[in-house]
Length: 451
Image (cartoon, rainbow, N blue to C red):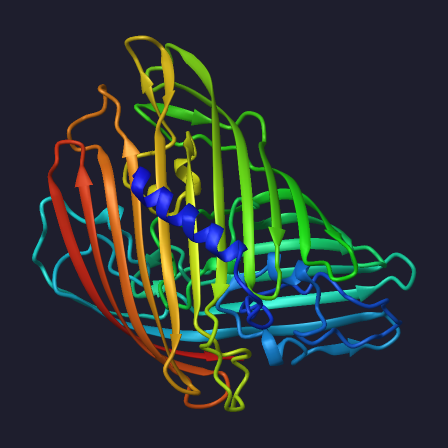
């Protein structure tokens, strides 16, 4: 674990010293366009991707098509209101083949769910659950800046009789000051502990096992420094929830978040921290205890010098240049903020000890690194490797999750505007406290059309 963290930290140091290699193309996500870089005018058309502020990038949600050259598409004004509206989203079908039981048959590859021992039962799934719909508004207050709203739903809810239920992803209202350097957001959104700028270009709905992220209720304030707004500081209070094994988790004080994000020309670097109060009672209701939890994260991206394609792009893919994305994170009692641990079959924040009446936080550490490569104008690939490790307690059973590994390789092609086709290969491993391991692989073909 220490070796993995050291490698990622050294990589971030190299990124800090890197020369400029062009503008940051990170605004590739679902974005409630909540900021401007110029003074707004009444009934002003929302900005294009190049003009929108860094707030848009930090508020983003992966995979939506409203970015880059399409960031200004689809808006229409409501006469006499100062408000613009936009509908969007995408339809995606995943054709999944698992040569063995991967633990979850749909478009989330989750190593922590891999059966133990390996179950060699094959499965094929046609999965449309990743498809998404979004709705945005932007209102010009003339003197007080912009007020924006944003809603997003997918279809990854419960399934019954061949039908799937819609699932709310985000629902937020934001205010951006007239100088576009101050903003406040309230609602359900991605946690401040997440760095969306390092989300790899993959069809996998979950993403790397070691990535931090959860969507939940929050109130967040942001401040951007200087005219360039390349340095943004965020503070937030967010939904409290304790995932505890052998006990009943309670919701006490809000989780506290802090984040700083810097976006120079060669990529970006982000540091984030979370402070928590874990509260739980025994399943028998005979005791209650609390403990402190904490977590830190360092992440970033780097545009590899000398890899920028010189031929003009034939679509809205923006700057076509190889890049590296990375994240290293760790802490105590933050399992629900880590993708793989939050989805694990047993809670990974803490364990309640009936013998002592104490709640004991679980310590974990994780890291991933990804490389994005351009083969040609419309052809590109992503390679991802991630590891998560839990420091098991003596009182945990032998079957307790200890470690997961995530590997992904893909090939993506955009035949025409708004359409993506891709083939992805996944491999994962789960290791338990007793050393028992389970493996799974997956081949997934996906078609995605944005609207």
